Amino acid sequence: MESWNTSSEEGFILLGFSDWPHLEPVFFAFISIFYSLTLFGNTVIIILSQLDLRLHTPMYYFLCHLSFLDLCYTASTVPQLLVNLSGLDRTISFGRCVAQLFIMLSLGGIECVLLVAMAIDRYAAVCRPLHYTTIMHPLLCRALVVFSWVGGLINSLIQTSLVMAMPLCGHQLNHFFCELPVLLKLACEDTGGTEANLFVARVIILVCPLVLILGSYAHIARAVLNIKSTAGRRKAFGTCASHLIVVVLFYGSAISTYLQPVHRYSEGEGKFVALFYTVVTPMLNPLIYTLRNKDVKGALWRVLGRGTDSK
Image 1 (cartoon, rainbow, N blue to C red):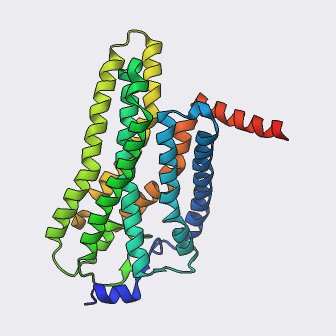
Image 2 (cartoon, one colour):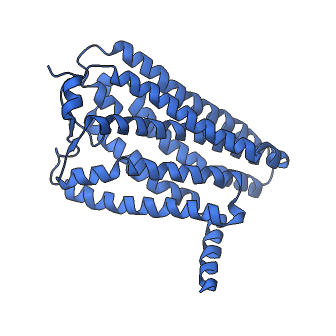
Image 3 (cartoon, rainbow, N blue to C red):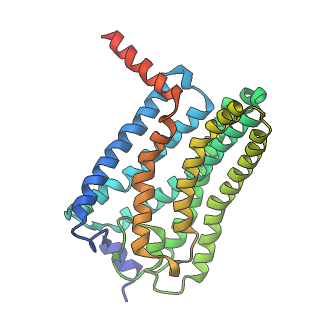
């Protein structure tokens, strides 16, 4: 049996979608398109949030950070996936694998907490509209973002350290990046104790934020139901719909991947779930937040008009 020390010298082979060689060119084409749309959509949101003063609000402050996370998320996996699909190189060094694991867990944890901050913002907007500017003070917004980053990084450091402490056997990862459940399947010994510690860390970073989000929306739902006019209810619901969709997409894939026992984790299904949350979701997020958003559309036209006027 080959141990972790041998793996650290030789690295790993990422099998990716080599089980379906006839689909790899199709995956390459579609993922390339999705990646380009992700880079464009999220970059546009960040630029508009910085240039247009009307978007200098808590909601777009958090959305700007969410877009930055999506850019980092895709940049840490998709370029390597495209190289893998092209057949040029399916290997990854031990150091890069550990770094990728840490980065992916960090970004996922940061987004978990950031979505709570966005839920608090929606709660203040719907349930406490008269006190909104007082509650969502810039200092609180910055503190929530800092807490998101610190919490995600610390949680990721704990999980990565636990995985690194295990002896691993073999060099083949049946995935397209260094995913936590796949690495655990390479363990040479019983992982019961490590899995229990990892599960606690994942509950803290996944379940606890989700409980806070659901609690916020319970108060929001009560406030919306108390609104007598249909137009008022529709407007209140409209301010939360985009965030709710993003929460469902993110937590649906995260829970199915990280809150199930390792022995029940299917590497075949896991690759397609991971493809969804690393490629599809980051591409959809800008569309979800901007498709029916008059503020963003107006900001885009104002920035474009300003650029035309300057010529």
